[in-house]
Image 1 (cartoon, each protein chain N blue to C red):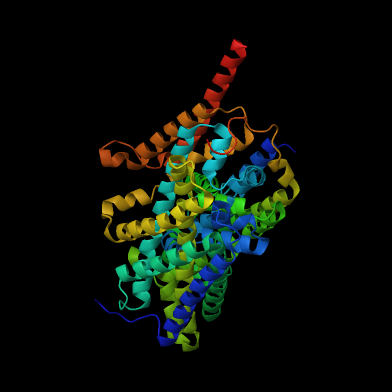
Image 2 (image 1 turned 180 degrees about the vertical axis):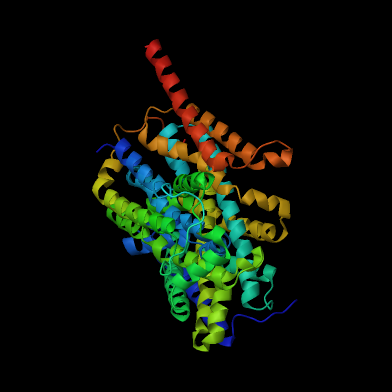
Amino acid sequence: MTRGRLYGLSTLLLLATAPWPFSAGHVEAGSAMPMPPWALYSLGMTLLYAVSMAYFLKRYWSLSADGETEAMPTSDGRD
Amino acid sequence: MEQRAALLDSGGYGVVALYFVLLFGVGIAGRLARREDSLADFYLGGRALGPLVLFLTLYATQYSGLTLVGFAGNAYRQGYAFLVAVTFGCSIMGGYLMIAPRLHALSKTHGFVTPGDFLQQRYGDRTLTLCATAIFVFALASYILSNLKAIGFVVSAATGGRVGFTEGIVLLAFLMVLYETLGGMRAVAWTDVIQGSILLVSCILIFAAVLHHHGGLAQHAALLAEQAPQKWQAPDLRGKLGWSSTLLLVSFGVSIYPHAVQRIYAARDALALRRSLSLMLLMPFVTTLLMILLGILGAARFPGLSRGESEQIVLHVLLDLVTARPEFSLLVVVLVCATVAAIMSTVDSALLSIASLVTQDLYALLRPDAGQKQLTAFGKRFSWALMALLVYLAVALPQTLWRLTEVKLEVLCQAAPAVFLGLHRPEVPARAVLLGMGAGLGLTLVLLLGDLLGLPVVAKPLGVHAGVWGVALNGALTLALSRGASRLLQRAA
């Protein structure tokens, strides 16, 4: 895993929480449904995103922390 | 002064007074716990915040009074489409994943106090640092202003007008700046432990009580689908683009709020920071989601409320419960305390952060020989002066200018490429970032405010926020200029 792939994957997972598979238009409410199906999808994907992010934070913290090189040697602290 | 029925009885006033005394006591404790008179000790708690305090201060700072009031009101008006707020609560951690690990490590090495310290160390360009600082100060000041206004309304409503809008703002602003200047980040973080706990427990208690009384969500969901089918339907393409745009705006913008960045700096170690960020991922489900569901239940139960009335939907639902079940009347006190706590925890953090930015990134330039003790003292005096100004503006700002406070997140986002690219793309030079920031900011402001100048623009082209368009232009231009500069250097070599 590289940082680029990690950040790309997390962004894709985030964007996938929008209810893309569901078209706009009237949806019948089921008698036992606490919310429409697309809302359940979005919440479920958000939960997946949250779990994924928790995993990424644990597994890839060092990857995100390590720079390829030290930042441009410009000034150390304040002028 | 117009007097209405107060939400608080004498017992409620007693609880609130006790809460205020507790906050003052924490301010004193924060002052006594200081190890030295330095900016790092005052503004970052000596860089020693452990996971529990760090988590609760992040939580209390991120979730303002908007959570308890605004989110439910939005859900009332928009229906299930406002579930996007649950996701954007999590999306902020996506932004932190990209910046927190490296920023924390660098802050330990270089002793950063403000986001400007990182930018100055990374780019070495004073103009860039000052421009970014100006963006940060604008965003924080706007944030404080809108929250001060909210607290005035809450206090007035809670006391039935006995304590007016202006008096409420003045009283609570005084208390906040008092404990903040006494104890700095320690006082703010420790009061956040209290305030965050109140907020979290309140959300769960209120939701559980209302849900128990109404027998679940399904019947109200079905009622809403019948009464207001537009609130049940999936968003159209424009709505989905707007949904995604909101997530990107929040992920990039909220993660670089200076008071959030300073909590990254203030973490005792990387493990404490990682654990607290992981816990934060759960919070939208036990805070935001619960308030949204209350708003939706309220939409089914109390249809036809005006916009202003819908902003108080949680109170409507709660008073409805208390009318039927008086034994739950304590929950009204809980709601008032939680709302006040949520607002105060956000304002005190933002105020502390602005004072640090002005002290470290501006005043210290003018007084390079000033020692840490002198700088810290200036920061405290500045906090008092700034709060006085913001209180005045919260009361007296013309309505037309309030619109400026609504653009804060979209403006703040324009500093995001400087931070994100600065951390991960060492080849990006300062001038490219500065030009990108200028272009992004220009585009954002034209889209957001162009109609005031008579320009034929819309604030959300294709449903995408102006700030996101701005960041896209900002980032693309920055990277393009970086590549161009790289090629020129290669040719020259």
